[in-house]
Image (cartoon, rainbow over all chains, first blue to last red; front, side):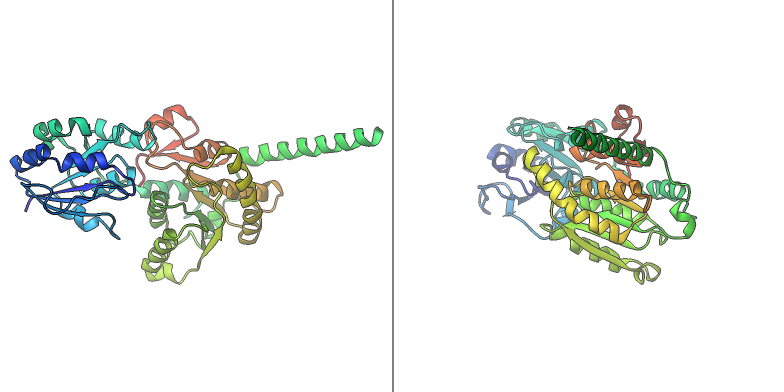
Length: 164
Length: 216
């Protein structure tokens, strides 16, 4: 079953949860072949129930010990712009759409999402453009996100500190 | 009057000598590298959440020569200890029989804390950091952003100033920082021996920074 996983991390982002479960977005998702919506809503005040979308099966929870399994099973991840959530989705190799909370003041978390968008690792929109973005998105333009190279750090330190 | 002048003169002379010594400690490396002895004692400052995840990836990459490993965590942080214990117990046999310690100190700056109260709590944290550094005498302090690392790095510098031990200060700015350094990063840029950034845009702004691509 093609699944969309929505995650807001430890924040609250009711506007995203409301947009993504609106009938407008649900129809677009259905049209693109998605059948199941799993939502991690964090500290938000809105927790959708299973019957909240006519077209999709919906599951919502606030927090889990690990969301790795939900990430792995997703065919599309929709996330807030938090660095932890972005890196986890990209590390799991999932197509990622980041929805920026434009009600929040600009914070440094956006830096990373913006850069990763410029490097074609993720798609990027706001709640007001979510429907359009989902309708027109082309996931094939996304570039894989290679893992970092901590061994470069280790080699540098070995030389600097004289470790043989 | 003469006494007062004398005291002022003595104090300014002490301050001048202190800053001269600080300058030379920060500027110069040590003559003997710690790796030449075969092992490097590391003090690792774990932050919380993403900071801890990043620094544990860096620790995984270091060889068994980096031992013992002393982890410092803020006393309000519950998650980091689990991550550290999980990492140390997953190490291969050659690593696991080498010792590691976990040390708790007061957090110096909670998120959204005001600047002035940050200064007070950083000074407070220095009271704990100094004895810790003097006791552990690491060859290297590795940190990546939590406010806790500032008093620890200052304590490490003091060890060098007092001529007790050259402590190499290694700072790795978080991957989250693409265009601007964190507050801790801006401070440690001045104090660290090796300052790593993970995006070339930061290397362009901060010429002393080392850029080897994305590390974590």
